[in-house]
Length: 384
Image 1: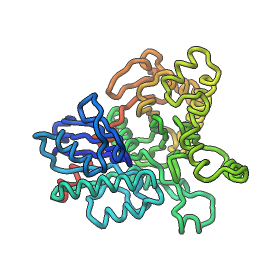
Image 2 (image 1 turned 90 degrees about the horizontal axis):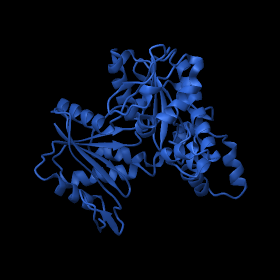
Image 3 (image 1 turned 30 degrees about the vertical axis):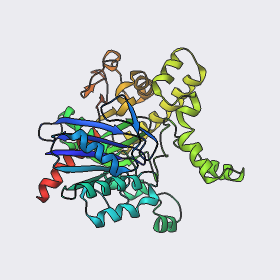
């Protein structure tokens, strides 16, 4: 099946066409600055007039498709709340249900819905499927997703751990199980999805048991511009010092993390600066690797002994230096990195620990677009 995968943002639309039977990418592109004055033209280095809305952006996608015939559309939707635990076929009721979740993801879900409605208007006959970032984490036991706060806050406002990056964590856990030669349902492991946004998930019997991101993607690891875990009283203190909620949100989501510690949110630049002996960069790497190692140790306990530690996403797949910093903190678990294997670059799953390592360490490339396309094709075929 030829599936158009859409990742719709408030001012951008990323797309990819996948042939799920051939396992091939037929087309991909990014339309930016939607609703703004200027945009990048698809498949061109030129700049052009901005498109006014997502419907107009789809006209550019349609033009780029040429003779490619689309049979279904798969959407990445960030927040599925407590209702959605798996991909679903879109109808008007599902679209309205996603809109009702807007307060939980005000920067993402409204934009996702814009993409859904634009597709429905342009190609009303095409089946559409939504794949939720939160869905894989619906298997969390209550003791993992509950916060120790009054029940009313959960009942009235839905305040609980939801977790994100679920599509990636699920895909990578299955790929890791295949690499190890075991059924995905037998996989107990820890997946570290490390990019500008970063999360770590404990997988027990192929299901999400715990994950570092919480009510929002801010909780957990140190990220590119996000603080990750911190004392909640800091927010109270800042409020008393005159910071507005908007200022606190900007501070913690856009001005913290690697950017705050090292002055740069690009891991490659931070690693290079640390190599030159720059103290701020060295500290940033120490803080970030220490936080991740703490989570790995905790999740090793949570899954009652991980069968593999898996690195994925931009930093996880490409930064040998950061992987080494993290694994060096895990000697108490008997983990031993193969330094030569660690620096090899490849686009396939690979082992980077030694044969003597008590726990295998893997690098497994993620492919969220593939996961969305395959889920879309499966669901559409089942409903045919």
